[in-house]
Amino acid sequence: MEAFFRTHAYLVEHLHAPVRRALMDEIDWTKRLIGIKGSRGVGKTSFLLMYAKENFDVEERKCLYINMNSFYFQGKSISEFAAEFYHCGGKVLLIDQVFKEPNWSAELRRCYDTLPGLRIVFTGSSVMRLKEENPELNGIVQSYNLRGFSFREYLNLKTGLRLKAHALDDILNHHEQIAAEICRQVNPLDHFQSYIHHGYYPFFLEQRNFSENLVKTMNMMIEVDILLIKQIELKYLSKIKKLLYLLAIDRTQAPNISQLALDIQTSRATVTNYIKYLADARLVNILYRLGESSPKKAARVMMHNPNLMYAMLPHQVNQQEAIEHFFQNALWGRHVVNVGDRSCNFVVDGKHRFRIMTEAPKRQLSGIYYAMDGIRRGDERQIPLWLFGFLY
Image 1 (tube, rainbow, N blue to C red):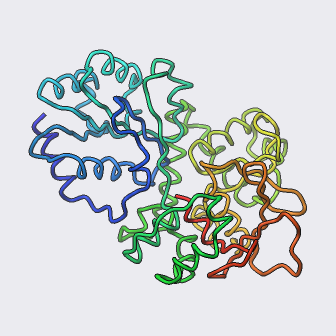
Image 2: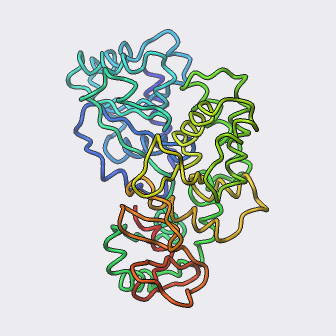
Image 3: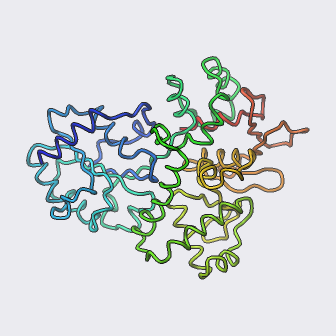
């Protein structure tokens, strides 16, 4: 136990988290069991440590961070360790990578039932389905998703500003005033292209080649988050990686499941499952036509964010594709994004129709919002594209 407290103190003391994540203020921290999911690389570990740093004095030993990668947990269960911590006066246990414990959900349930004064916050892969696949946690776990940096968070990091988030309706109705206020403090266009290329994942701050690091992270998403958690045999790894590549190079059309099945030499049903796993891992997003959803055929499969496109296909990304990926990623998670018809690229929440454009339209269509790349401020239904990066 003493060694874990020393590690916790060291990590908190040396934490480098220059941006306070918006999710920190959205979580109900009074709940006894909180799960924080997110794709690899979005900063889940830093998020836990930031919570500890903001709320607990390390000298009081009321809060403790542990990582299930530790070999110590090959001989000690989560519930046994939690009980020892609790009886030493512990109040909050932060468990990183909980899925590395084979019986993690049953262990968390045991902690919940036997340690009434202990709060547990744990992180897990976005591939995990906390409630659907773990019925013992139904009704007791509060689940949240930690995303990569929004453009707003990236801009705050780069400038030292404290620009606030805005709801979609606020942006649609008041974008001229909002953009004017932001542009008085910074020119967002000075940073927007860099964000599209490398700003979504916090590890761009590290002194390493970002694209190489992201490719390595993407491989880990498939090899660990998909194969390990979904219990897929290693021999199928190459098929999933090839499928992701094929989806990336043909990202403007509805996926041809039959052709993809031939290309990776498997069944149509398996291709459909693999695409779903890639979406769970936050490598792709599956978009449907308005009024449709799974198990209907996907209308489009897009990379989860434009950073992934540049890492996979650095010389094959055009600006129109990049900004469409930015837009759907910015709206993803809190809004329903459907593929549009001939008049628009996307329909949001079943009612807002958007065209994503690099140049001003020669004539504006009625009922369409135009998300415009390359402009600082908009006018009426022409809205600066970068402003949609302020939704969280």
